[in-house]
Amino acid sequence: MSELLRISDLIRNQDSFTFSFEVTPDVGEAELDKITLYPKFYSITWHALSHQCKDLNIAPLKLANLLRQKHKHVLLNLSCNLMTKAYLNDLLPWLQEKGICNLFIVLGDSFNPNRSDFKNSSEMISYIKTKTLDYFCIGVAGFPYDDCKITALKEKIDLGADFIISQAFFEANIYKNYLEKCKDAKIDVPIIPGIFPFQSQKELDMFLKLCKVKVSEEFKMKLEGKSENVMDIIENLILDLRNNLNVKHFHFFTINKLGITCDLVKKIQLSL
Image 1 (spheres, rainbow, N blue to C red):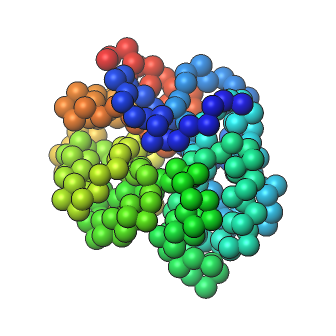
Image 2 (tube, helix red, strand yellow):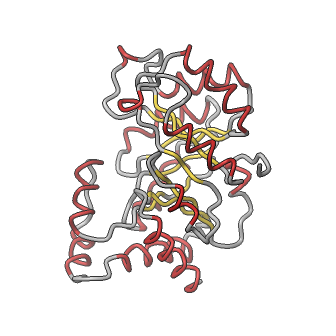
């Protein structure tokens, strides 16, 4: 099993372009084995409405264990939805036993505080810290399109969150402005840009509707001029962030399209 490393250590002092992949628990082992690149870590999504946190034999934990056996670093997502303290009390030592020390704490889809022992992710972060001290490196979500959530984000950082992964965005100025707002709020942890490599207008529209975000008219015009090769827009975004903002690490929301994402990463590597 690979050395136990925290995300904050994995991305620290990087001089070159580095990346990580988010995958869902139903990704096939064969697909993972086809990857010839070396993501710094794999983030595994959590689907409480599907597995109901019924036991420790659920899909995201099976995948986390599989990746650790393949000597990969894992960032396990955990949501407050349907989460109980009793389940967490069983889960945390299991994760320590498996050599998993990185968690990404979110509220969760269709969150209902009446079906959880935690009314928000700040409460879960505080509980995990109380139980395990500094064993876990904790990440939280950043929302570049929503200024109202920066106060809540600062609270999570003050409680011990170690890094932020942003919601996907498509224009460099959105990320730049977000960094400035976080700096004004005295948030000084790494803010990893989230990248969604969409392949079509339809995929982008679905994402924008799901996440309730908008893009500028300038971006819409740029996209309309791309009848094909829309992935060039994402490539140019990454190169812009890399060259002009000195961003080193990028997190890809792959939706298990690993081959396509790997091709994009290889293309970027050749451009740098």
